[in-house]
Length: 465
Image (cartoon, rainbow, N blue to C red; front, side):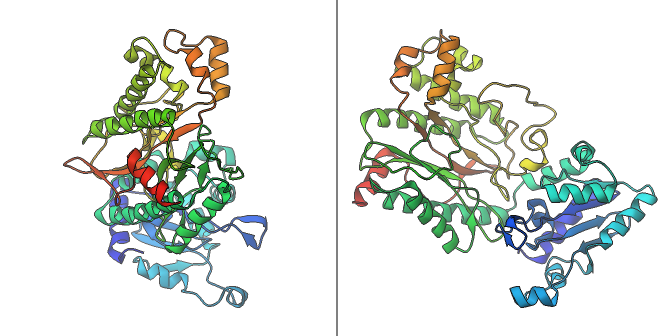
């Protein structure tokens, strides 16, 4: 946990924004893998962590603005719990560390909310994303499960999104800790990978490094020779000389803050000439996006700057043709770059995605209504304010099925040289990703140096043999 005053001040600032009503926060519960007592690793809800800091299952919290009360509802350990889990810090002890003195049994939250509703008081809640919390909330508020999302409090969502988006110096320090441990994970993968190894062997080393640092993985590891599959969590391939390894993995600290980095490197000692050429294009696009990321620049413009860089590189290789600005405006470049250039990052690797993209990544001045590849998965478009933490992660992905589909449809024939593209259907993909904070003076790269230049990567690969 941070110091007590951090949580007290966060809650006070939120209450000041909402002015009145009752703010309801659902923590997460244990989630069974295959039976009740065999659970996945517990992860607390991020908004609950932000305001209450307690990583304990089965909690609900209330900030009662009108009555100036803050209450946590949850059940202390029973003797059976102590027998199986051992004596642990009590919920009340944890609550006191975040400035809350009132603890009531979990079931009392039903009476508390019932009384508030009977007095026609406003109960604000955030859209739930876990099935068990949806059921509890539906029972609590006497509304249908399917109505919960639409009935969630928009003022509450907007207030939380605005507050969590601006990272404090304490938060950025914790995120940088996660990024530095993530860098160690990536260096380990670069140093240990050898031809003939299975992907799962390297993935196991990465996971072990995350655990060794006192945290865990921020998301399932993407470690694959099939880098054209954007979120490939399969680790069953044997890595062969001549292939590329795409490693997208991140560490989460004990406080829940994330790192999220990607590097692509050869299974062997060196990139071949084709790999070097494509890699250089992706790296140049990353640098263009960095240069475009200035205080209050719109991230959607950063995205298009990266797209133009990638398209220009594809044209230089003979894979695209025509006017590049027109090609990017039409979406032709998305044959090679199907996703967005980046996203917000913090307590979630895609920060606050559960609150809704239109509140987190966009605003009243910029709305997203498109089904085009690239833009439809661009989670961040609005202006980059000081305090934002985000990723930049351009890539080039040769997806055979997409190439075949677009070619059959004769899509963007004036911009795409399909005859040349056919020769790259076996290429796989390359992605490079860094983490940044926006400051009043400009872009800040988070973390210690991690090899990204071709020569740096090859030097590490050569030292692995």
